[in-house]
Image (tube, rainbow, N blue to C red):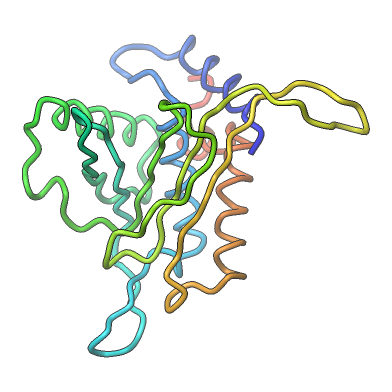
Length: 204
């Protein structure tokens, strides 16, 4: 995924933002992109029920965010992501991360996740595949954002890129739907103004 535009929009919004709106990070934008993609592809926001031997869609989009706390990985959950602006998601994510690092998370903070994002880019990891958290059916892995040589219009140039990985439960999501879902996340990250406009907040 090319991230030059993602950085430009993030920096522009942060310059224009007024308190008390939180400053946006790449993680906030990835959360928003995932939430929008899950709305478009509800099949990815689902679980396999072994007793009934069928697939059930979750009623809400609750995004778990893997957080490193003193070399321990925890995944608190941002609940009810559908319909929330990127700034609302950012505020909730910041509060969860702060409570996690202060070791003040409660059991409810971990509960009811329907999808998880695991970002190891801050550790210099370029690409990896995360393990699904049952009963969820998919998890997104996010690698390091860094400059790379790329070809644009037959010309060699430098751009910033990241690598995404998607692990899925094939009882719930087949390869075609998984590819379309991941492609939608990529499209949103490469067209980030759409995510800001979705909340009617860009340039406000």
